[in-house]
Image 1 (cartoon, each protein chain N blue to C red):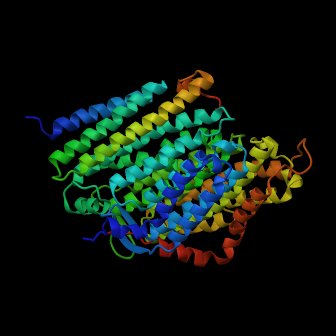
Image 2 (image 1 turned 120 degrees about the vertical axis):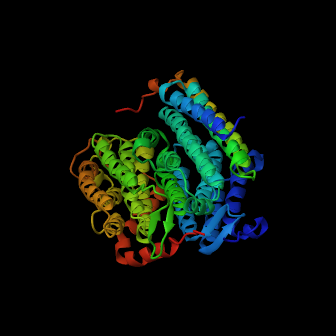
Image 3 (image 1 turned 90 degrees about the horizontal axis):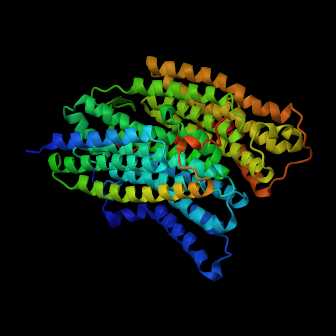
Length: 101
Length: 495
Protein backbone atom coordinates (compact mmCIF):
# COMPACT_ATOMS: atom_id res chain seq x y z
CA UNK A 1 0.00 0.00 0.00
CA UNK A 2 1.41 3.35 -1.05
CA UNK A 3 0.86 6.05 1.56
CA UNK A 4 1.81 9.63 2.31
CA UNK A 5 5.40 8.81 3.44
CA UNK A 6 6.23 7.32 0.03
CA UNK A 7 5.25 10.52 -1.74
CA UNK A 8 7.15 12.63 0.78
CA UNK A 9 10.30 10.54 0.39
CA UNK A 10 10.20 10.80 -3.40
CA UNK A 11 9.61 14.55 -3.26
CA UNK A 12 12.41 15.03 -0.71
CA UNK A 13 14.78 13.10 -2.99
CA UNK A 14 13.69 15.17 -6.01
CA UNK A 15 14.19 18.38 -4.06
CA UNK A 16 17.65 17.33 -2.91
CA UNK A 17 18.71 16.39 -6.44
CA UNK A 18 17.40 19.72 -7.70
CA UNK A 19 19.29 21.73 -5.08
CA UNK A 20 22.40 19.64 -5.68
CA UNK A 21 22.25 20.39 -9.41
CA UNK A 22 21.68 24.10 -8.81
CA UNK A 23 24.68 24.28 -6.51
CA UNK A 24 27.19 22.10 -8.35
CA UNK A 25 26.40 22.76 -12.01
CA UNK A 26 27.34 26.06 -13.57
CA UNK A 27 25.69 25.53 -16.94
CA UNK A 28 22.65 27.76 -17.39
CA UNK A 29 20.42 25.08 -18.94
CA UNK A 30 21.41 22.45 -16.39
CA UNK A 31 20.57 24.86 -13.58
CA UNK A 32 17.16 25.44 -15.12
CA UNK A 33 16.55 21.68 -15.08
CA UNK A 34 17.49 21.60 -11.41
CA UNK A 35 15.01 24.40 -10.81
CA UNK A 36 12.31 22.39 -12.56
CA UNK A 37 13.00 19.43 -10.26
CA UNK A 38 12.65 21.65 -7.17
CA UNK A 39 9.31 23.02 -8.33
CA UNK A 40 7.99 19.57 -9.19
CA UNK A 41 9.08 18.20 -5.83
CA UNK A 42 6.95 20.92 -4.23
CA UNK A 43 4.07 20.02 -6.55
CA UNK A 44 4.26 16.39 -5.54
CA UNK A 45 4.17 17.43 -1.89
CA UNK A 46 1.19 19.69 -2.43
CA UNK A 47 -0.83 17.05 -4.22
CA UNK A 48 0.04 14.31 -1.74
CA UNK A 49 -0.94 16.51 1.19
CA UNK A 50 -4.11 17.52 -0.58
CA UNK A 51 -5.02 13.83 -0.92
CA UNK A 52 -4.00 12.57 2.53
CA UNK A 53 -4.16 15.52 4.96
CA UNK A 54 -6.86 17.85 3.77
CA UNK A 55 -10.12 16.86 2.16
CA UNK A 56 -10.34 19.91 -0.12
CA UNK A 57 -8.58 20.66 -3.36
CA UNK A 58 -6.45 23.59 -2.18
CA UNK A 59 -3.20 21.73 -2.69
CA UNK A 60 -4.15 20.68 -6.21
CA UNK A 61 -5.14 24.25 -7.14
CA UNK A 62 -1.83 25.43 -5.75
CA UNK A 63 0.01 22.84 -7.87
CA UNK A 64 -1.71 23.99 -11.06
CA UNK A 65 -0.60 27.57 -10.40
CA UNK A 66 2.93 26.36 -9.72
CA UNK A 67 3.04 24.48 -13.04
CA UNK A 68 1.99 27.63 -14.92
CA UNK A 69 4.52 29.75 -13.07
CA UNK A 70 7.27 27.21 -13.71
CA UNK A 71 6.56 27.50 -17.44
CA UNK A 72 6.65 31.31 -17.26
CA UNK A 73 9.87 31.27 -15.30
CA UNK A 74 11.51 28.83 -17.72
CA UNK A 75 10.44 30.99 -20.67
CA UNK A 76 12.01 34.10 -19.16
CA UNK A 77 15.15 32.26 -18.09
CA UNK A 78 15.64 30.73 -21.56
CA UNK A 79 15.14 34.15 -23.18
CA UNK A 80 17.79 35.66 -20.94
CA UNK A 81 20.18 32.75 -21.53
CA UNK A 82 19.64 33.04 -25.29
CA UNK A 83 20.30 36.76 -25.21
CA UNK A 84 23.49 36.31 -23.20
CA UNK A 85 24.61 33.53 -25.54
CA UNK A 86 24.17 35.65 -28.67
CA UNK A 87 26.14 38.44 -27.03
CA UNK A 88 29.06 36.60 -25.59
CA UNK A 89 28.73 32.90 -26.53
CA UNK A 90 29.08 32.06 -22.85
CA UNK A 91 26.59 30.06 -20.87
CA UNK A 92 28.51 29.04 -17.76
CA UNK A 93 28.02 31.20 -14.70
CA UNK A 94 31.70 30.73 -13.82
CA UNK A 95 32.77 32.43 -17.03
CA UNK A 96 30.47 35.40 -16.50
CA UNK A 97 32.67 37.44 -14.24
CA UNK A 98 32.86 40.85 -15.92
CA UNK A 99 31.77 42.57 -12.71
CA UNK A 100 33.96 40.93 -10.06
CA UNK A 101 36.44 43.22 -8.35
CA UNK B 1 -13.51 33.05 12.62
CA UNK B 2 -13.50 36.07 10.40
CA UNK B 3 -15.98 36.53 7.64
CA UNK B 4 -14.40 37.12 4.28
CA UNK B 5 -15.85 39.32 1.57
CA UNK B 6 -16.86 37.58 -1.64
CA UNK B 7 -15.43 38.30 -5.06
CA UNK B 8 -17.81 41.05 -6.19
CA UNK B 9 -17.98 42.78 -2.82
CA UNK B 10 -14.18 42.83 -2.73
CA UNK B 11 -13.77 44.76 -5.95
CA UNK B 12 -14.27 48.16 -4.34
CA UNK B 13 -11.10 47.57 -2.30
CA UNK B 14 -9.23 46.41 -5.38
CA UNK B 15 -9.60 49.47 -7.64
CA UNK B 16 -5.97 50.54 -7.26
CA UNK B 17 -4.69 47.22 -8.58
CA UNK B 18 -7.30 47.28 -11.38
CA UNK B 19 -6.09 50.71 -12.50
CA UNK B 20 -2.53 49.45 -12.59
CA UNK B 21 -3.51 46.32 -14.53
CA UNK B 22 -5.42 48.44 -17.06
CA UNK B 23 -2.49 50.83 -17.46
CA UNK B 24 -0.17 47.84 -17.81
CA UNK B 25 -2.14 46.65 -20.86
CA UNK B 26 -2.68 50.11 -22.34
CA UNK B 27 0.99 51.04 -22.12
CA UNK B 28 1.95 47.80 -23.84
CA UNK B 29 -0.72 47.89 -26.57
CA UNK B 30 -1.11 51.55 -27.44
CA UNK B 31 2.22 51.97 -29.27
CA UNK B 32 1.16 49.17 -31.62
CA UNK B 33 -1.42 51.52 -33.15
CA UNK B 34 0.52 53.73 -35.60
CA UNK B 35 -1.40 56.86 -34.66
CA UNK B 36 -0.34 56.63 -31.03
CA UNK B 37 3.23 55.51 -31.63
CA UNK B 38 4.74 58.76 -30.45
CA UNK B 39 2.61 59.27 -27.35
CA UNK B 40 4.85 59.43 -24.31
CA UNK B 41 3.95 56.36 -22.30
CA UNK B 42 5.48 57.84 -19.18
CA UNK B 43 2.49 60.16 -18.88
CA UNK B 44 0.03 57.28 -18.93
CA UNK B 45 2.16 55.41 -16.43
CA UNK B 46 2.42 58.41 -14.11
CA UNK B 47 -1.33 59.07 -14.36
CA UNK B 48 -2.09 55.44 -13.51
CA UNK B 49 0.29 55.63 -10.56
CA UNK B 50 -1.37 58.79 -9.26
CA UNK B 51 -4.84 57.21 -9.64
CA UNK B 52 -3.68 54.05 -7.87
CA UNK B 53 -2.13 56.22 -5.17
CA UNK B 54 -5.41 58.06 -4.61
CA UNK B 55 -7.32 54.76 -4.44
CA UNK B 56 -4.80 53.43 -1.93
CA UNK B 57 -5.02 56.54 0.24
CA UNK B 58 -8.79 56.11 0.42
CA UNK B 59 -8.55 52.47 1.53
CA UNK B 60 -9.74 51.82 5.09
CA UNK B 61 -7.31 50.32 7.58
CA UNK B 62 -9.86 47.81 8.83
CA UNK B 63 -11.41 46.42 5.67
CA UNK B 64 -10.84 42.82 6.76
CA UNK B 65 -10.14 40.02 4.34
CA UNK B 66 -11.23 40.20 0.71
CA UNK B 67 -11.55 37.59 -2.05
CA UNK B 68 -12.43 34.86 0.48
CA UNK B 69 -9.39 35.53 2.63
CA UNK B 70 -6.83 35.83 -0.14
CA UNK B 71 -5.93 39.47 0.54
CA UNK B 72 -6.12 41.69 3.60
CA UNK B 73 -7.20 45.32 3.61
CA UNK B 74 -5.44 46.62 6.69
CA UNK B 75 -3.01 49.30 7.82
CA UNK B 76 0.05 47.31 6.89
CA UNK B 77 -1.02 46.74 3.29
CA UNK B 78 -2.02 50.41 3.02
CA UNK B 79 1.39 51.57 4.22
CA UNK B 80 3.28 49.33 1.83
CA UNK B 81 1.08 50.27 -1.12
CA UNK B 82 1.80 53.96 -0.50
CA UNK B 83 5.48 53.05 -0.18
CA UNK B 84 5.52 51.17 -3.50
CA UNK B 85 3.62 53.86 -5.41
CA UNK B 86 6.00 56.57 -4.16
CA UNK B 87 9.11 54.64 -5.12
CA UNK B 88 7.71 53.63 -8.53
CA UNK B 89 6.80 57.26 -9.31
CA UNK B 90 10.42 58.25 -8.78
CA UNK B 91 11.69 55.27 -10.76
CA UNK B 92 9.46 56.17 -13.73
CA UNK B 93 10.76 59.74 -13.67
CA UNK B 94 14.33 58.48 -13.49
CA UNK B 95 13.82 56.11 -16.42
CA UNK B 96 12.02 58.64 -18.59
CA UNK B 97 14.84 61.16 -18.36
CA UNK B 98 17.71 58.72 -18.28
CA UNK B 99 19.18 57.24 -21.43
CA UNK B 100 19.83 53.71 -20.29
CA UNK B 101 16.53 52.47 -21.71
CA UNK B 102 16.13 53.47 -25.37
CA UNK B 103 12.90 55.32 -26.22
CA UNK B 104 11.39 52.59 -28.36
CA UNK B 105 11.68 50.06 -25.52
CA UNK B 106 10.16 52.29 -22.87
CA UNK B 107 6.55 51.10 -23.36
CA UNK B 108 7.57 47.51 -22.54
CA UNK B 109 9.63 48.75 -19.67
CA UNK B 110 6.75 50.63 -18.05
CA UNK B 111 4.37 47.78 -18.70
CA UNK B 112 6.61 45.31 -16.89
CA UNK B 113 7.28 47.84 -14.14
CA UNK B 114 3.54 48.23 -13.53
CA UNK B 115 3.20 44.44 -13.43
CA UNK B 116 5.95 44.26 -10.85
CA UNK B 117 4.17 46.97 -8.87
CA UNK B 118 0.95 44.90 -8.85
CA UNK B 119 3.04 41.97 -7.58
CA UNK B 120 4.40 44.17 -4.80
CA UNK B 121 0.86 45.35 -3.94
CA UNK B 122 -0.32 41.75 -3.66
CA UNK B 123 2.72 40.68 -1.64
CA UNK B 124 1.92 43.39 0.90
CA UNK B 125 -1.67 42.26 1.32
CA UNK B 126 -1.60 38.49 0.70
CA UNK B 127 -2.97 36.38 3.55
CA UNK B 128 -2.80 33.06 1.78
CA UNK B 129 0.25 30.97 0.91
CA UNK B 130 -0.90 30.60 -2.70
CA UNK B 131 -1.45 34.35 -3.08
CA UNK B 132 1.86 35.08 -1.39
CA UNK B 133 3.72 32.74 -3.72
CA UNK B 134 2.01 34.17 -6.81
CA UNK B 135 2.68 37.74 -5.65
CA UNK B 136 6.36 37.07 -4.99
CA UNK B 137 6.72 35.34 -8.35
CA UNK B 138 4.95 38.18 -10.18
CA UNK B 139 7.28 40.60 -8.46
CA UNK B 140 10.35 38.50 -9.20
CA UNK B 141 9.66 37.51 -12.80
CA UNK B 142 9.24 41.15 -13.79
CA UNK B 143 12.34 42.18 -11.85
CA UNK B 144 14.43 39.55 -13.65
CA UNK B 145 13.50 41.04 -17.01
CA UNK B 146 13.93 44.64 -15.86
CA UNK B 147 17.39 43.89 -14.46
CA UNK B 148 18.50 42.84 -17.94
CA UNK B 149 16.85 45.70 -19.76
CA UNK B 150 19.85 47.79 -20.65
CA UNK B 151 21.10 46.80 -24.09
CA UNK B 152 23.96 49.27 -23.96
CA UNK B 153 25.69 47.54 -21.12
CA UNK B 154 26.93 44.00 -21.51
CA UNK B 155 26.85 43.50 -17.76
CA UNK B 156 23.08 43.83 -17.72
CA UNK B 157 22.48 40.38 -19.23
CA UNK B 158 24.90 38.82 -16.83
CA UNK B 159 23.14 40.46 -13.90
CA UNK B 160 19.80 39.25 -15.16
CA UNK B 161 20.96 35.65 -15.58
CA UNK B 162 22.45 35.46 -12.10
CA UNK B 163 19.32 37.05 -10.70
CA UNK B 164 16.88 34.61 -12.31
CA UNK B 165 18.81 31.38 -11.66
CA UNK B 166 19.43 32.04 -7.98
CA UNK B 167 16.06 33.73 -7.63
CA UNK B 168 14.40 30.60 -9.00
CA UNK B 169 16.32 28.47 -6.52
CA UNK B 170 15.28 30.57 -3.56
CA UNK B 171 11.60 30.91 -4.48
CA UNK B 172 11.58 27.18 -5.28
CA UNK B 173 12.94 26.44 -1.83
CA UNK B 174 10.32 28.76 -0.35
CA UNK B 175 7.59 26.92 -2.24
CA UNK B 176 8.86 23.60 -0.90
CA UNK B 177 8.75 25.04 2.62
CA UNK B 178 5.22 26.29 2.00
CA UNK B 179 4.16 22.82 0.87
CA UNK B 180 5.36 21.37 4.19
CA UNK B 181 3.56 24.12 6.07
CA UNK B 182 0.40 23.21 4.16
CA UNK B 183 0.91 19.56 5.01
CA UNK B 184 1.43 20.32 8.69
CA UNK B 185 -1.67 22.45 9.05
CA UNK B 186 -3.97 21.36 6.24
CA UNK B 187 -4.63 24.93 5.23
CA UNK B 188 -3.11 27.63 3.05
CA UNK B 189 -4.65 30.61 4.82
CA UNK B 190 -2.07 32.30 7.04
CA UNK B 191 -4.53 32.87 9.89
CA UNK B 192 -5.86 29.32 9.74
CA UNK B 193 -2.25 28.09 9.69
CA UNK B 194 -1.52 29.91 12.94
CA UNK B 195 -4.67 28.54 14.56
CA UNK B 196 -3.67 25.01 13.51
CA UNK B 197 -0.11 25.50 14.76
CA UNK B 198 -1.44 26.72 18.12
CA UNK B 199 -4.01 23.95 18.48
CA UNK B 200 -2.18 20.86 17.27
CA UNK B 201 0.93 19.10 18.42
CA UNK B 202 3.19 19.72 15.47
CA UNK B 203 6.45 18.01 14.68
CA UNK B 204 9.11 20.61 15.62
CA UNK B 205 11.69 19.37 13.10
CA UNK B 206 9.35 19.52 10.11
CA UNK B 207 8.15 22.94 11.22
CA UNK B 208 11.74 24.11 11.56
CA UNK B 209 12.64 22.88 8.07
CA UNK B 210 9.58 24.59 6.62
CA UNK B 211 10.46 27.79 8.51
CA UNK B 212 14.05 27.73 7.21
CA UNK B 213 12.99 27.15 3.60
CA UNK B 214 10.49 30.03 3.70
CA UNK B 215 13.22 32.20 5.21
CA UNK B 216 15.44 31.37 2.20
CA UNK B 217 12.89 32.88 -0.20
CA UNK B 218 12.32 35.96 1.92
CA UNK B 219 16.02 36.38 2.72
CA UNK B 220 16.72 36.46 -1.00
CA UNK B 221 14.22 39.27 -1.55
CA UNK B 222 15.55 41.39 1.31
CA UNK B 223 19.18 40.39 0.50
CA UNK B 224 19.99 39.07 3.94
CA UNK B 225 23.36 37.30 4.30
CA UNK B 226 23.64 33.82 3.16
CA UNK B 227 21.28 34.75 0.30
CA UNK B 228 22.76 38.10 -0.66
CA UNK B 229 25.28 37.07 -3.35
CA UNK B 230 23.11 38.25 -6.24
CA UNK B 231 22.79 41.81 -4.94
CA UNK B 232 26.20 43.32 -5.85
CA UNK B 233 26.23 41.96 -9.41
CA UNK B 234 22.59 42.77 -10.11
CA UNK B 235 22.78 46.26 -8.60
CA UNK B 236 25.86 47.02 -10.67
CA UNK B 237 24.67 45.50 -13.93
CA UNK B 238 21.04 46.62 -13.96
CA UNK B 239 19.95 50.05 -15.27
CA UNK B 240 20.40 52.56 -12.43
CA UNK B 241 16.68 53.30 -12.14
CA UNK B 242 16.02 49.57 -11.69
CA UNK B 243 18.80 49.35 -9.15
CA UNK B 244 16.96 52.07 -7.22
CA UNK B 245 13.70 50.14 -7.59
CA UNK B 246 15.25 46.87 -6.40
CA UNK B 247 16.94 48.51 -3.44
CA UNK B 248 13.75 50.23 -2.26
CA UNK B 249 10.52 48.70 -3.58
CA UNK B 250 11.65 45.09 -4.01
CA UNK B 251 13.32 45.09 -0.60
CA UNK B 252 10.20 46.70 0.87
CA UNK B 253 8.07 43.96 -0.69
CA UNK B 254 10.38 41.37 0.85
CA UNK B 255 9.87 42.91 4.27
CA UNK B 256 6.11 43.17 3.67
CA UNK B 257 5.98 39.44 2.88
CA UNK B 258 8.21 38.74 5.87
CA UNK B 259 5.96 40.65 8.28
CA UNK B 260 2.84 39.15 6.72
CA UNK B 261 3.95 35.51 6.96
CA UNK B 262 5.90 35.63 10.22
CA UNK B 263 3.67 37.90 12.27
CA UNK B 264 0.47 36.24 11.10
CA UNK B 265 1.47 32.59 11.07
CA UNK B 266 4.56 32.02 13.18
CA UNK B 267 3.74 34.32 16.10
CA UNK B 268 0.95 34.50 18.64
CA UNK B 269 -0.20 37.92 19.77
CA UNK B 270 -0.63 37.92 23.54
CA UNK B 271 -1.96 41.34 24.49
CA UNK B 272 -0.17 44.68 24.81
CA UNK B 273 1.22 44.34 21.30
CA UNK B 274 3.75 41.65 22.20
CA UNK B 275 4.15 38.54 20.07
CA UNK B 276 5.64 35.21 21.05
CA UNK B 277 6.74 32.39 18.74
CA UNK B 278 4.15 29.75 18.07
CA UNK B 279 5.04 26.11 18.83
CA UNK B 280 8.25 25.24 20.68
CA UNK B 281 10.42 26.85 18.06
CA UNK B 282 12.19 29.99 19.27
CA UNK B 283 13.48 31.42 16.04
CA UNK B 284 14.35 34.78 17.53
CA UNK B 285 17.93 33.62 18.17
CA UNK B 286 18.27 32.49 14.59
CA UNK B 287 16.99 35.80 13.22
CA UNK B 288 19.20 37.89 15.49
CA UNK B 289 22.27 35.94 14.35
CA UNK B 290 21.10 36.47 10.77
CA UNK B 291 20.72 40.21 11.42
CA UNK B 292 24.17 40.53 13.01
CA UNK B 293 25.90 38.56 10.25
CA UNK B 294 24.02 40.46 7.53
CA UNK B 295 24.94 43.94 8.73
CA UNK B 296 28.54 43.04 9.53
CA UNK B 297 29.13 41.31 6.22
CA UNK B 298 27.48 44.09 4.22
CA UNK B 299 29.61 46.76 5.84
CA UNK B 300 32.90 44.85 5.66
CA UNK B 301 32.41 43.90 2.01
CA UNK B 302 31.62 47.51 1.09
CA UNK B 303 35.09 48.63 2.17
CA UNK B 304 36.98 47.67 -0.95
CA UNK B 305 34.36 48.66 -3.55
CA UNK B 306 35.12 51.34 -6.10
CA UNK B 307 31.92 51.17 -8.12
CA UNK B 308 29.34 53.34 -6.37
CA UNK B 309 26.36 51.19 -7.41
CA UNK B 310 28.11 48.10 -6.08
CA UNK B 311 29.01 49.95 -2.90
CA UNK B 312 25.38 50.94 -2.40
CA UNK B 313 24.41 47.29 -2.94
CA UNK B 314 26.56 46.24 0.02
CA UNK B 315 25.19 49.19 1.98
CA UNK B 316 21.70 47.88 1.15
CA UNK B 317 22.66 44.45 2.54
CA UNK B 318 23.83 46.11 5.76
CA UNK B 319 20.57 48.04 6.02
CA UNK B 320 18.56 44.83 5.62
CA UNK B 321 20.44 43.68 8.73
CA UNK B 322 19.45 46.82 10.66
CA UNK B 323 15.80 46.42 9.70
CA UNK B 324 15.84 42.78 10.87
CA UNK B 325 16.73 44.09 14.35
CA UNK B 326 13.27 45.66 14.47
CA UNK B 327 11.74 42.35 13.42
CA UNK B 328 13.26 40.37 16.31
CA UNK B 329 11.85 42.79 18.87
CA UNK B 330 8.54 40.98 18.27
CA UNK B 331 6.40 43.86 19.49
CA UNK B 332 4.23 46.59 18.09
CA UNK B 333 6.99 49.20 18.48
CA UNK B 334 9.38 46.97 16.54
CA UNK B 335 6.99 46.62 13.63
CA UNK B 336 6.16 50.32 13.67
CA UNK B 337 9.85 51.21 13.60
CA UNK B 338 10.43 48.87 10.65
CA UNK B 339 7.81 50.83 8.70
CA UNK B 340 9.33 54.14 9.79
CA UNK B 341 12.82 53.00 8.87
CA UNK B 342 11.67 51.80 5.44
CA UNK B 343 10.10 55.20 4.83
CA UNK B 344 13.29 57.08 5.72
CA UNK B 345 15.26 54.55 3.69
CA UNK B 346 13.04 55.23 0.66
CA UNK B 347 13.82 58.95 0.62
CA UNK B 348 17.48 58.49 1.50
CA UNK B 349 18.23 55.78 -1.00
CA UNK B 350 16.27 57.36 -3.83
CA UNK B 351 18.09 60.66 -3.24
CA UNK B 352 21.42 58.85 -3.41
CA UNK B 353 20.46 56.86 -6.51
CA UNK B 354 19.16 59.94 -8.35
CA UNK B 355 22.55 61.59 -8.00
CA UNK B 356 24.26 58.32 -8.96
CA UNK B 357 21.99 58.15 -12.02
CA UNK B 358 22.86 61.70 -13.05
CA UNK B 359 26.55 60.87 -12.87
CA UNK B 360 26.24 57.45 -14.50
CA UNK B 361 23.82 58.41 -17.23
CA UNK B 362 24.69 61.96 -18.23
CA UNK B 363 28.41 61.68 -17.56
CA UNK B 364 29.22 57.97 -17.74
CA UNK B 365 30.78 57.91 -14.28
CA UNK B 366 30.19 55.00 -11.93
CA UNK B 367 33.50 54.78 -10.08
CA UNK B 368 34.33 56.78 -6.96
CA UNK B 369 37.22 58.33 -8.97
CA UNK B 370 34.69 60.22 -11.07
CA UNK B 371 33.11 61.85 -8.01
CA UNK B 372 36.25 63.93 -7.40
CA UNK B 373 35.62 67.66 -6.92
CA UNK B 374 31.87 67.18 -7.39
CA UNK B 375 31.49 69.60 -4.47
CA UNK B 376 32.83 72.47 -6.56
CA UNK B 377 31.49 71.32 -9.91
CA UNK B 378 27.85 70.87 -8.86
CA UNK B 379 27.46 71.97 -5.25
CA UNK B 380 23.76 71.18 -4.97
CA UNK B 381 24.00 67.60 -6.26
CA UNK B 382 27.02 66.99 -4.06
CA UNK B 383 25.01 68.35 -1.14
CA UNK B 384 22.07 66.02 -1.91
CA UNK B 385 24.37 63.00 -2.08
CA UNK B 386 26.16 64.06 1.11
CA UNK B 387 22.86 64.40 2.96
CA UNK B 388 21.80 60.95 1.74
CA UNK B 389 25.10 59.40 2.80
CA UNK B 390 24.96 61.06 6.24
CA UNK B 391 21.43 59.71 6.58
CA UNK B 392 22.59 56.20 5.62
CA UNK B 393 25.26 56.41 8.32
CA UNK B 394 22.67 57.67 10.81
CA UNK B 395 24.14 61.07 11.69
CA UNK B 396 21.74 63.01 13.98
CA UNK B 397 19.80 65.62 12.10
CA UNK B 398 19.03 63.30 9.18
CA UNK B 399 16.12 60.92 8.69
CA UNK B 400 18.31 57.82 8.95
CA UNK B 401 19.22 58.74 12.51
CA UNK B 402 15.58 58.85 13.61
CA UNK B 403 14.92 55.56 11.83
CA UNK B 404 17.81 53.82 13.55
CA UNK B 405 16.89 55.41 16.88
CA UNK B 406 13.34 54.03 16.84
CA UNK B 407 14.52 50.66 15.52
CA UNK B 408 17.19 50.12 18.15
CA UNK B 409 15.07 51.61 20.96
CA UNK B 410 12.26 49.15 20.19
CA UNK B 411 14.70 46.22 20.31
CA UNK B 412 16.54 47.32 23.47
CA UNK B 413 13.31 47.85 25.42
CA UNK B 414 12.50 44.14 25.18
CA UNK B 415 15.60 43.43 27.35
CA UNK B 416 16.02 40.15 25.51
CA UNK B 417 19.79 39.35 25.46
CA UNK B 418 19.74 38.50 21.73
CA UNK B 419 17.98 41.75 20.86
CA UNK B 420 20.47 43.74 22.91
CA UNK B 421 23.34 41.90 21.22
CA UNK B 422 21.87 42.75 17.80
CA UNK B 423 21.51 46.41 18.79
CA UNK B 424 25.11 46.58 20.01
CA UNK B 425 26.22 45.02 16.72
CA UNK B 426 24.07 47.56 14.88
CA UNK B 427 25.70 50.49 16.68
CA UNK B 428 29.21 49.14 16.05
CA UNK B 429 28.30 48.60 12.41
CA UNK B 430 27.04 52.16 12.04
CA UNK B 431 30.50 53.30 13.13
CA UNK B 432 32.14 50.86 10.70
CA UNK B 433 30.04 52.09 7.82
CA UNK B 434 31.33 55.66 8.25
CA UNK B 435 34.53 54.63 6.50
CA UNK B 436 33.15 53.73 3.09
CA UNK B 437 30.48 56.44 2.98
CA UNK B 438 33.19 58.96 3.77
CA UNK B 439 35.30 57.70 0.88
CA UNK B 440 32.66 59.10 -1.47
CA UNK B 441 32.38 62.34 0.47
CA UNK B 442 36.16 62.71 0.58
CA UNK B 443 36.28 62.32 -3.20
CA UNK B 444 33.50 64.90 -3.63
CA UNK B 445 34.82 67.61 -1.36
CA UNK B 446 38.51 67.11 -0.66
CA UNK B 447 40.03 65.63 -3.81
CA UNK B 448 40.73 67.48 -7.00
CA UNK B 449 39.54 65.81 -10.18
CA UNK B 450 40.82 66.38 -13.67
CA UNK B 451 37.55 67.63 -15.09
CA UNK B 452 36.21 71.04 -14.19
CA UNK B 453 32.98 72.87 -14.85
CA UNK B 454 29.47 71.79 -13.83
CA UNK B 455 28.50 68.22 -14.68
CA UNK B 456 25.90 67.54 -17.35
CA UNK B 457 22.53 66.97 -15.79
CA UNK B 458 18.82 67.13 -16.42
CA UNK B 459 16.44 69.54 -14.72
CA UNK B 460 13.84 66.83 -13.90
CA UNK B 461 16.49 64.75 -12.20
CA UNK B 462 17.66 67.78 -10.23
CA UNK B 463 14.11 68.27 -9.01
CA UNK B 464 13.75 64.62 -8.10
CA UNK B 465 17.02 64.72 -6.16
CA UNK B 466 15.82 67.84 -4.33
CA UNK B 467 12.39 66.38 -3.62
CA UNK B 468 13.96 63.27 -2.13
CA UNK B 469 16.60 65.15 -0.13
CA UNK B 470 14.29 67.65 1.57
CA UNK B 471 12.28 65.04 3.53
CA UNK B 472 15.54 63.50 4.71
CA UNK B 473 16.53 66.87 6.14
CA UNK B 474 13.12 67.96 7.40
CA UNK B 475 11.74 64.78 8.99
CA UNK B 476 13.55 65.63 12.22
CA UNK B 477 11.19 68.58 12.80
CA UNK B 478 8.09 66.42 12.83
CA UNK B 479 9.42 62.90 13.29
CA UNK B 480 6.98 62.22 16.12
CA UNK B 481 3.81 62.65 14.10
CA UNK B 482 5.24 60.62 11.22
CA UNK B 483 6.07 57.89 13.71
CA UNK B 484 2.50 58.02 15.00
CA UNK B 485 1.25 57.76 11.43
CA UNK B 486 3.28 54.59 10.85
CA UNK B 487 1.89 53.38 14.19
CA UNK B 488 -1.67 53.78 12.94
CA UNK B 489 -0.73 51.90 9.78
CA UNK B 490 1.08 49.07 11.55
CA UNK B 491 -2.22 47.43 12.52
CA UNK B 492 -2.60 44.18 10.67
CA UNK B 493 -5.30 41.59 10.13
CA UNK B 494 -4.58 38.76 12.53
CA UNK B 495 -7.90 36.98 12.69
